[in-house]
Length: 292
Image (cartoon, rainbow, N blue to C red; front, side):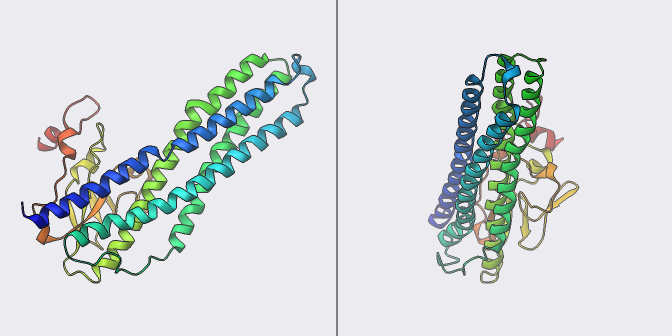
């Protein structure tokens, strides 16, 4: 492999590893905020009279709403900040390999229009706030059962822990990882459109995630190269890039695939081990299934 090819491969490896690190840790703060809300509500119920009939349901519900509204606001602020990081990283995922391949000067492209980022931030923050809103409804049902005497307070505390536990955590992490990935991929695509106006022959390549249990059609697209303005073909679906907002949700939720810049001069420098590790739900290597 030439020194140029090694430099390109090193930059691709670096930007994709940085993306993976960012996504792996992006949900930690959100999960911690959920735990804080849970602890606050458990303490709230512990301060109530032992006889649930003496509870002021409206006051307890108001404090539940306040606690989860604060969760929503803090989680939204965190996610908005992460979106900015994802936006910058998505641009770098195009600029860094192109600079290593001596096709562009790093930082020479114009600044991306951030109106798209603003719209995506609004969507993301509304979705993460919905996690708290949905929890309020479920918790109020449990509180009502307790005040009516149909359920002891201890069971209500247990129910609140469940509501704000794995179910809410899983939904929140799905939102965080999916929407941050969408911002990242959208920024990468917008940057690629810019660079394609200056770099003759610039194309894009689909990279499968290498997850143990991938979508078969996403894995089949691994290594697929298309012109920048042409969609990737994934079975019956067509996506301009991974996490394309125009694609069905079934093709984007928790998708780990990425798009990288491609140029014919780089043949041999673009390597992807995804198929080596991918397995179907039965544990069979998908690579073998694709070869049948």
